[in-house]
Every structure is written in C-alpha cells, then in structure tokens.
Length: 269
Image (cartoon, rainbow, N blue to C red; front, top):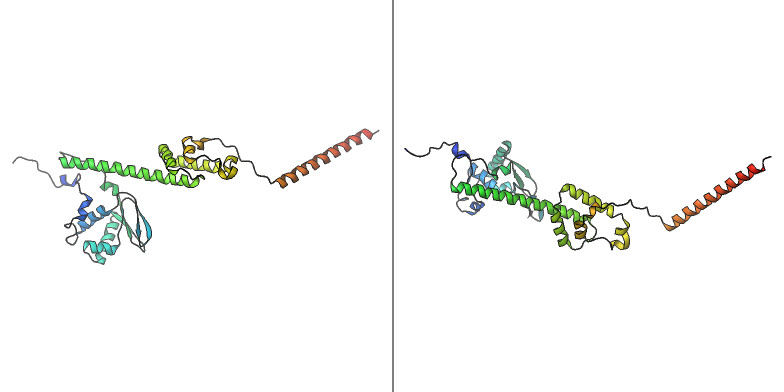
C-alpha cells in the first residue's frame, strides 16, 4: 500500500490554526466541557495584549496571558459545579500551567508560559498550505503584539515626561517628537533628571515660567544635554544688607587694629 504512515508522535508536533471566533460558535458551548476543552477555553479567553476592564466600577488591569473570570462564571460556562471548578484550577496550578489570584471582584487567571502557545514551533516533514499559512499568521501576530507592547511602553514613558515637564502646551506635537526619539528607560531617566535641574535655573523661574521652551522644541533640540551651572542661592535683600554691613564693620575694625599696631611700633624707643 502506497502512502505515508505517520505515528501519533508526528501529530504531537506543529500547530493548527484555531481562531478565537470559535468561542462564539454554538457548538463550542453546546454541552458540558471536558477538561481538555476547558483548558483550551482558558487559552482562547486569555488576553493577547494588555487591557483595562471595569467590574462594578473598579478598574482592573489585565496583562497579556491573563483573563478575569470568576469561578462561578466559569462553572456556568463549562456546565460544572463550583467544587469541580476549584479542583480543576488547583490541578492546573499544581502542574505549573496557570496561577490564580482571587479578589472581591473576580479571579485573575494567569496562563504560565503563555507565549509558547503563540509562537511558531519547529515542524518536521512536509507542510500543507494550511500549516504554512498558520506559521505566517502566527509570525504576523507576534510582530503585531511586539509592536503594540513597544508603543504602550513608549506612551507610558511619554506620560512620565509630560507629567514632569512644567509647560503643558502642544501635547500632540510633543508626543510626535517623543516618538521620534524612541526613548528607552535609560534616556527617560536622563531627561527627567535634566528637567529637575532646569527647574532650578533663573530662565525657567523667571516670570512664572514664561521663558520655558515648548516641550516639543525642548525634545527636538535635545536640551536635556545642556550643561547647567549650579543655581545661585537666593538671598533676601535685608539679609544681604545686614551681611554687607557686618562685612564693612569687620573691615573697618581690622583696619583700625592694623593702624594701632603700626603706631605702637613707631612709638618704641
């Protein structure tokens, strides 16, 4: 008999293309879930990028590879009782497949090694068109997710810069200049430190900050690299007057003492 005979091990390698849209199919939730289907359901429900949700008005941040579902909600979804849900999640957690954290609002489930279920894997032997398409789509998703993560971090760093910079004008232009810089955490630290130094200069303090540059221009000209002289300590006019008076009195006293010493030497026989 002609043909290729594949072992069970052959089918344990590689990937299939499973779209999250299957969650909306009536066949997916038509019957009580098996343990395997419940595990796949968790993988499909997990966020592929960070997200913020609100439950009863409380803000909850969900990271990549996490999902926020109460155990009661999962029990209803899977057709299980509460005890079975608790036992199953503990079983997965003991095997290092996920972690759970329950609060007053919901249960945060974190899929361990979530990226392993998203990245392409090594595939041996011939690949069908569907397999090649899956690998291409997976690579595309990985690149998109990486880009989204970089954009999120870049925006977070910009928000820290904007909060620190005293002149709040032309924010879109400032954001454009910031994105051109592609500042990492190291550069952000340098910029924030320079802003604090600039705040001590006479130029930035004069006339309630009238002479502070627009943030976009400050960034484009790389003004954080300016060499800034140490600030001069402010001295109240009355304090300065008293100091100068004491200095004159001391100078006069020293001069008088010197004069007396000179006259005493001249009077000696």
